[in-house]
Length: 123
Image: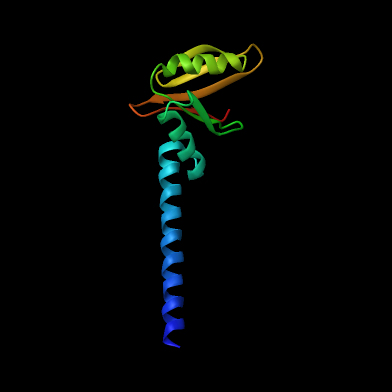
């Protein structure tokens, strides 16, 4: 009987610790990258840190989020946007406006020694 209670207590503690770890990782991912999808953000970061990719999209849609290598990140961003048919139209600090003649996209660009972060803004 005591063994069942001990096992049950261990399971409850383990599940509780895992839940706390998942919440903390999701919070860290949201604060650093703007997405609660920690596995996707971690894989993207590892991809750029290892040098296997120049950039990785971690969130799509209208509020796209991309992380890129910090080296030559401005050039990588320009090539990325050119591949999508956009060119830079204006810049105000870390906010960059891109247009393709019919549509405009606004994104916030930041870079540190570990990665460059590109976050698109809602229109």
